[in-house]
Length: 168
Image: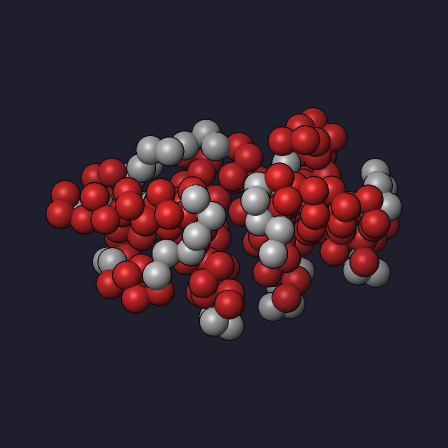
């Protein structure tokens, strides 16, 4: 995985950023203190660190900030042409939007994710399938999701998380 905004990351921090990115790729969240010591421009220069930071922020209950980081991660993965990670972050953003009551884009995002599963099915990660499963549970969005049952969406999510080594 390459850094997408290398000019935004100070030379003195590139090795640390790469080490933290490798940690994320190995399925571990970077240490909170280490991530917190990085300047914002270094974190925002790495979609992988934005992804990990978003998860940390969600776990800490800082949902509005997590929403901003997820949006930045989506843009970063899009710039890297990493479609799978971009879709995964859209799935997580969709789940977060519903959690904080921001339904403005949720229906559109769910429709988009469902269309992507029809195109790329097996290539879609757990967050995509989980968002669709949750979408089938919401009265407001259930009618727009017609492809699979709620149980099938949840089963696909579990399978993808398990395949990624994230079955905790």
